[in-house]
Length: 112
Length: 118
Image 1 (spheres, rainbow over the protein chains, first blue to last red):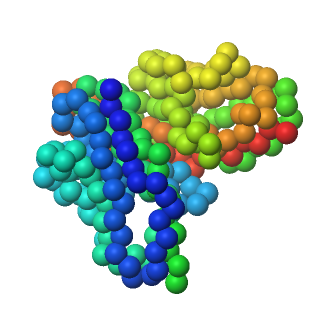
Image 2: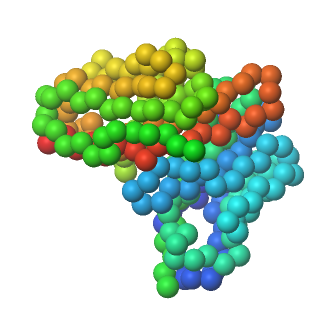
């Protein structure tokens, strides 16, 4: 079956530091990959996505590249802000399935 | 555009009482999901509807939980009787699923209902 593995959190950084949150997956076929972000007290919202190998999704300074050879979709940002403090979820969806598979989430805490 | 709407945002009830959570999906979406989120178990899928029909309810924890979708713009999740272990944040999400179309089918989540059962 499908699965998503994310690095354990929390990740604690100072403002303007470089961020990497690792995500690897197991899936049949060619899934679409997603990063969702959940700010405190809110629902998950789509941050970025990629639908095929070597695609790069980007949004709000965040980037992730669909690496089929390593089955990875790591999230990166060059300079984090306090407002980026949130929980980040990696997810995938196979084309033939109605239901996405989510990782456990990684909490990011950014200090001023 | 209005996103997914959930009500109430917060619910506090006593053990044994019936609880009804409500969801209005994004207009035009044909898939609706109910999730539960807790610190211990993370995000769990409870049930999924496609075109108002329940497709997969294997995540519903027990018979105390039931969900309906009487039309394309409304769904309910009911817990009867409620128990303290049901305390969690319940999310509704919707998506547009179109087979045969290159569509990643991302989900749009509501703000959640925080349920506390005392």
